[in-house]
Length: 216
Image (cartoon, rainbow, N blue to C red):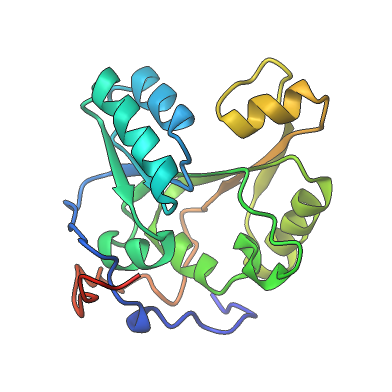
């Protein structure tokens, strides 16, 4: 299908430092996993699913890694990397069963960097299985409203909007926001079986053009 948005330049993405390829098996992926509360809960509740939790911030990643070592879920893998280059280098077309993007940075001063405003979102969709879903959660009503409109106008994807229960405790942010009495919502976005992108045949770069060891 035609996307009314400029095309993401996937081939220009350098691999994350210490990149490790993954196998072309079905996986779930959490982007911005923080200290890993949701990743640990989800992998414990769904031992039949493989979850990869990606976190860019070193301190949060180390906290997640430490807790994973204690709990030992065999179906959870943790990755310290920026999500965009990692997705381009690691994931295969239609490999992902579910993406989780829970309480991302709302980018108040740079709306173009919000997930559904980025050309990269098309590439992300190409990695999702037909029938797979993306869960996008936020405590900012305007963020959810804008994402809804993008789903209608740009991505032309079906979705369901849900109010998150006051008892939910998937992430540390979610607990904090709900304790404050803030409205937390999520969009469950589904990829139809006949949905196509310009990246459906794009294979993972698998660490080509590896960044230098001292790269940021």
